[in-house]
Length: 114
Image (tube, rainbow, N blue to C red):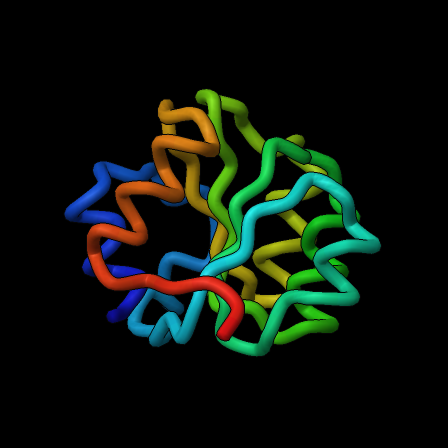
């Protein structure tokens, strides 16, 4: 599934790298600990978090994640958006809490660790 499909199906707001929405998602990972994401996420994963600071972009770039979804209606800091544009990292936002968003992703066929 591509990011553009998720944006439409889950009514996500796109805050950065809108030109990269054709990227394919190969899995999903939900965590708010950067060290946990660094240790356990996989290339192509969609990352669900409530963190909004610029370090999320560095982690997503290092792990070559498909994108980041911020939950609970949280908005990225301006510095985060600017860094994401530079690194070509898609940041999306959802009004849903992590648990519900993860469930909907699972229902759409996005799986976690295998």
